[in-house]
Length: 390
Image 1 (cartoon, rainbow, N blue to C red):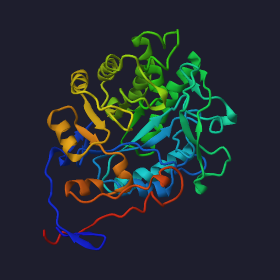
Image 2 (cartoon, rainbow, N blue to C red):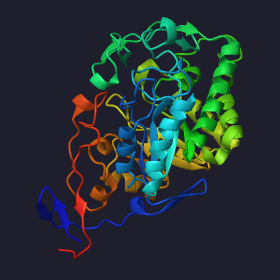
Image 3 (cartoon, one colour):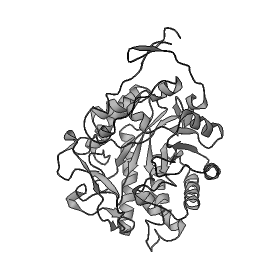
Image 4 (tube, rainbow, N blue to C red):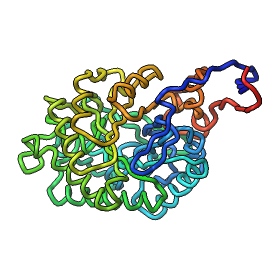
């Protein structure tokens, strides 16, 4: 095989490891065990509608065995960042349909990540300037969101990071309404052509806010004991599984990260109990954000082994993985699939580059959130031919 990279011919060696083998997830055939995890890029059009540019972005990355979309709010209230896509009305469903069609045209598999940010929002994002909602009215000092207070719009890419606004505590009827919104969003995702959904239960957003002891100070049946703090997770996941089938459902968790100020006093006890809840429901996978950011420690081996014992479905790990670390996780049985996050931003053809040990493009951080094609769909792709190996 001849590889042309920026006009140069490179020698390469094909790596044959478990990472590049096929896998079956909930009856879906995955071409390899590489996952593109959800990454917010804030490129949706006004009305929080997915665009043709987003369709191009995802279709470029169909070398992954599984793509999980960026966080997609289940309601206007569930939005925490400017210009992120929703999936709660007909226009948004149609926008996502062009994305899933483009992915499927390249033989890709894509799940929608369903998202309610809870307290991690700003009044400029909320309808009529309302306060964000949360299990408890607790502000996370220093936790910022990407907002557009001046209303300049996504086409200008001129948002800014601002302190999230003080939340108010959810009422019991409001909690039930949000559970229903998740279930309806899952149905909308299937209507939009997604192969399944992932519920965002990580990184300090609403589901995790209910789970973690330091963000949930409720005294009713949704707070206090561990069983009560897991109640919202159980009810949301059950509702979604009933709506579209448990084989189409995954959940993301981040047991040790401290993103968005969400922390639990006993994370291993709490999250292994959560894994057992999800195992009882029988969902397709748990997606563990092990160390997405620099402040998160790598999970101890004993913690990973406890996850494997507690959950019989597919386990996905993401967080600073290399091919070597991925292979170790797969060989030792901690993981079935491995997510590579930020490398996918700058390398649309990442699986090919990893398998053939080719150089990686460096991402332009200034274009991570908002803007146009620059830093989004214009990263170089290695051109492949099949003439000969040199």
